[in-house]
Image (cartoon, rainbow, N blue to C red; front, side):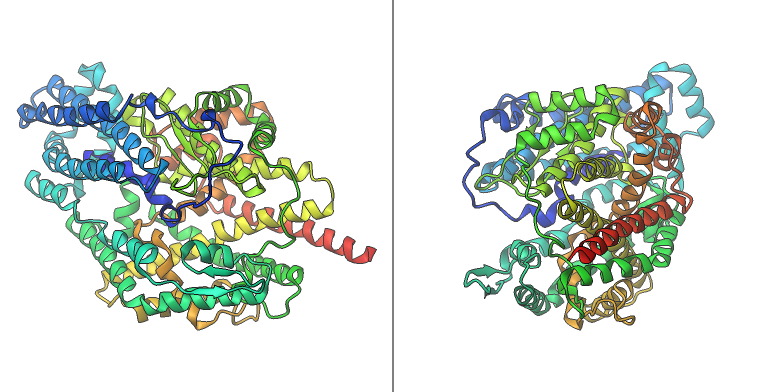
Amino acid sequence: MTNLNSLRRLAVPAALGLVLAMEVWTMTPTLAETEADRWNLADLYPDQEAWQQARESLDGKVDALEPLQGTLGQDASHLKQALDILFEINKAGGRLWSYASMLSDQDTRQSGPQGMKQQLQSQFATISAKTAWIDPEILEIPREKIEAFLAAEPGLAIYRRYLERLEKRRAHTLDKKSEQLLGMASMLTGDGNTIGSILRNAEIPWKTITLADGSELKVDVAGYSRGRASTNRLDRIKTFDAFFSELKAFEQTLATTLAATVKAHVFNARVRHYETTLDAALLSDEIDPAVYGMLVEEINNSLPALHRYLRLRARMLGVSDLGYHDLYPSLVGELDKDYSWATTQEAVFKAFEPLGKDYLAGLQKAIDGRWIDVYPRTGKRSGAYVNGSAYDVHPYMLLNHQDDYESASTFAHESGHLMHSMFSNATQPFPDADYETFVAEVASTTNEWLFFRYNLAHARDDHERLAILGKFLESIRTTVFRQTMFAEFELEMHRMGEQGKPITAASLDELYLRLLRKYYGDAEGVCHIDPIYAVEWAFIPHFHYDYYVYTYATSFIAGTAFVDQILSGEEGARRYIDKLLRAGSSKPPVEILKDAGVDMTTPAPIRTTIRRMNEVMDQMEEILDRISSSK
């Protein structure tokens, strides 16, 4: 974790949910809501005045570093003093960002918290520039001398991983002046994402359509998500036509925003002497790019399983000409079951019993301690996330609970993030507490699997079993196959940028349509992909995130393997918690997963997931045959 990256990564919880972040609920507070159902930000700072005082004090910490410049190689004491201050700045920055961002998310209509975030972002960029000399100066110290410092000064032990990771980036770290310039340039990165988000969420004049029941639907980002899930096929087709035709009208500008992001990634890779943008994104996180390539290859080899699912979906929907507009409606309707907040907690705790008493006690502490903001309110940010950046306090969770199965599953998912952060922060010193993106979704998807298995085991009838199996099968499609398709698109798009090829609406449409048709079996007659859907790339903000999407797929795959281990007995659960959830970034992420029981450098976990997918389809087809034969 370099000083620059650690400050920039503070915004990750917000960035990952960007698709949802701009969709603001317009409903009144849930009647069941009480003060206990809202998070308590006073655990971070008693009020905004205290926050401002803490923010202003951050500059003093930075100034304390200046006299140390040029001294880090003198002795272990000077090196430790500089690292102590640096990581104190990072820790304070995480707490400051947590408060400002979550205060804003409580009510996105308020301009005050937005201004607080902007203050911090500007301050972080300045701090990054002022501290940019540290990494290059450390790298001027011979490796043998660093080892001698570590042996002489026990207080440096908590920085061993930081120094090891820095050593691996020796060839990619520039001189002090260059690093300072890059730190200042960080204020300019991310503009492509920001402009695209504003365009999609605020300035495109989205169309309004009339649905079959006579109601009207504005097909913006939120309306598209609702309309595509309609049980009325004509409404779905109308929704797709309205949404994608409007995206098409603005695709030239949206392509320019994506081209700007790719150019920034190519610039970063070249100035830091990486061979490719993929190397720059993955090697800094200690991931072998071969893992990325293996994922794409294995999922391409597994497309027959996806095509089997699509044929099953066509059968259950009763259509002979499955189209892209048929992929989102529920296969058997909504579950007629109580998923109130109280019932959700009960079901989740029962599903998590294999994880042990300490795990359940930690989750109960989060609920009782008001770490969770539960219900939707007017102005509250939609979606869900966990913010674990306040190391000295505790993680926080944002939900928008709607008393349905999806909301309950979301709580199970986010609980994985919360407990991962809680265990990691409690076990690891601050420099090693922030786990890498490669393992960031593993705990959450493991929890989804456990919740799915519990609900399936307690289903009341075949209809309920079909609904649960169908929902989870769809999560495999969207998380494993769709995210891998995104990863393949992102890789080829960056190669275009590296080779100096134009990144235009036309070239992106051509690439995306080719991948869509391959993955969804257009040539095989599995699912028809209309050319207008080639512009879907313009709807996906994750393509700005620098090779992040593949981790959704790898995390889901790892979670599949971990569930088998956890359900095997107490020892399996203990290994999962101790070796993964408590590990933070104390080792490279692939090694952490291997220690915990899953080796992601081999295709075995991917193949296990595909096997589980086929088992789910076996169960669904058996139920459908039973229902058909009984008629």
